[in-house]
Amino acid sequence: MLAYMPFTVITSVFLIIGNFPVPSVNKWMASLFGLNVSQWSAKLAIVNDASLTIGGLLVLLAVSRTLADKMKINGMQVMLTSVVSFMVLTPYKTTKAGSFLDVTTIGAQSIFLAILVSIVVAIIYRTIDRKGIKIKMPASVPPAVSSPFESLIPSFVVITLFWIVRLILDAFVNLSALSLFNQILGTPLKAMGGSLIGVVFVKMFGQLLWFFGIHGDSIVNGVMTPIFQVLQDENKTASLAGHVVPNIISQSFWDGFASIGVIGSIFAIILIAHSRRYREMKKIAGIPYIFNIGEPTLFGIPLMLNVTYFIPLMLSNVVSIIISYGAFALHLVPLPTGLVQVPWTTPIVISGYLVTGSISGAILQLVCFIAVILVWLPFVKIEDRAILKEEEQGKAEANNDK
Image (cartoon, rainbow, N blue to C red; front, side, top):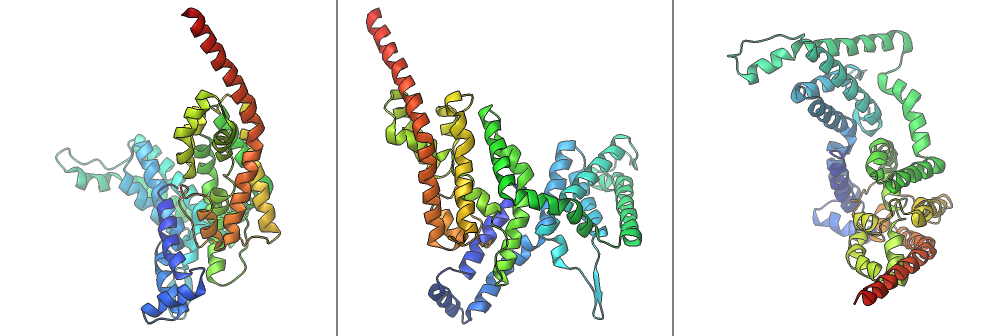
């Protein structure tokens, strides 16, 4: 999924320009090229059509190549076999003009299916490859020539199996693999990931992992990013069509509003801490956290295995999530449009404005920022006093030794 993420940011740049939140500026930029606003937006949307609109296919390529590298099998052939297998499951639409592929079947809504296909292809391919069931060429044949022949049997078996699945679906289910998969798993996943309770649970689980020294974001994001990206794409599609944005929770909500929590710890320290340790700490941790880089804080305070900070570590993000969700649900702030997905290092206030297209999004982030600082303040005060006491005892013992 990380290989897919840069394209969401690149596309966002073009969509920001094409749908600039200030109408007069948007009209002026369009006039520079002799276009009206709608034509200008359509031209800049070409990048979206070439990237996120085929998001499922991009994820398929990235996941299948990553799995092949991990399993130490032929990466190129696994990628190509995954693409063919995926397309075998994807029906074409037929009209009087001929057959064509509906691009939505390889878009973000197919990410879940793409991941599943990549995993199945890689596992079957590896199983056949390790059993040595392949066409073996003489040692004198160059690898560039022998490799495709060696992959012939594994690829043939994999594609045949997916073809059989397609025949079964056509004969007995009368649904495409994408429709069936989204009904069985995709819809429940979106419902879970797109709910307030689901996001709170996932965030608290990630923070619990951090408390025990495990990189919670890496583990949680690996599972939730596909869900949030699907919800993000639904918002973007609705925004481009001029419809009401359907989802409060999306990738933009997760990055820009649900993750305002631990930042309160370092700024609480900046405001009230007097111990020498924390005075030194805030010199090195404050600036990185402006850009949402929290490792200096997490490891420097430290927050991990620190019982004093367990409650704010678990609940500060929850406070931010509830405030933000309430503001969006009550229509006090426009929902993230999905047109813009900024890098996670974008400072708050800036990211809030960009993803919602409104200054109220920036104000909401400020409110969350203040709220999480208030959550952290009493706990920082307790820990700072304890550290001060230790430092004073250390000084007294050093003076006695002299």
